[in-house]
Length: 312
Ligand SMILES: Nc1ncnc2c1ncn2[C@@H]1O[C@H](COP(=O)(O)OP(=O)(O)O)[C@@H](O)[C@H]1O
Ligand SMILES: [Mg+2]
Image 1 (cartoon, rainbow, N blue to C red):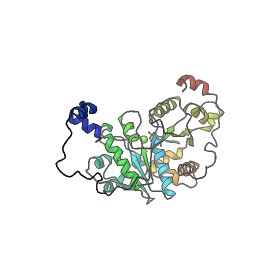
Image 2: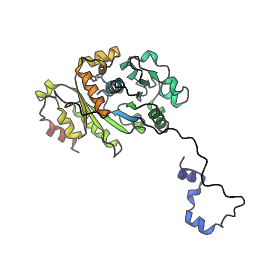
Image 3: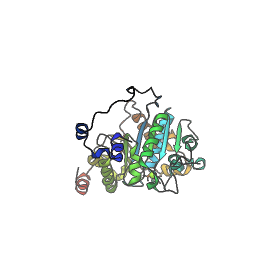
Image 4: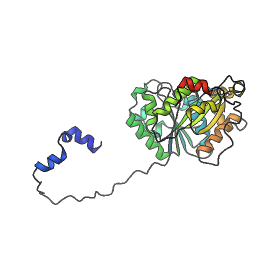
């Protein structure tokens, strides 16, 4: 609790401090004054890890798929990674990772001290350095206290290099809780006008000093070429964010989800390679090749899109 809040609760804030000092008699010290310095307290280690929220506004655009694949790719590079499913009530990150049978406790169990963090963290089957904190399935997003969520993410930043937070759709309390402890955001957007508009709205709700990065997902180059789908440039002419990567529409994503094996581990998959390239970029490695090799489009939709969104 801050000094200001304490003062407010005790009523002290109601007395202007200048008036109080002018009228009150000077206190007479009855005992030797307390030393000004407190004995040194053992301090918790400063958090080293990066907390990144994966968000979009619109549902079904690929946040969970992105969280699972980026986390898997970062862990495969040797980083210590924890994935936090903040989609309370609709959890599915555990399924995408194939870890559903191992989940015993969830995020709210930890926040409500029904389980320790160590009990609730689920170790990935494939990578020692990847862990999952699952969401509760039978609770509401409103049940999560924002300050507790912030403290939890801080604690995870002490233990892991990356804390990737899978955000629920929407801009209500679940979104706010998912963003609360984060320091950076990745926006996932599909080449649809409604997704772009929602992404634009979400960017406007994030802290001003963040520079979120963009992933455009489910791009279909053939449709872009024919002028039937927005191109990556069309999308980013509106959002104007640093482009982290582009993922094509790929039936293998759904197969991988059903198998619980993220494509990021598939050495033969172009989509897997795209996730690995994004992980390299996030980790600060030399810039990978152009993240939109087969986008297929030279735009043409921008004027229409700009008119629909009212520009920025
Ligand atoms: N690039 C892609 N190609 C094909 N299907 C995809 C792709 N990305 C995501 N999907 C599918 O879209 C659906 C929604 O993805 P999901 O990651 O759950 O979205 P969100 O978390 O934003 O709601 C899932 O069935 C997923 O398998
Ligand atoms: Mg999801």
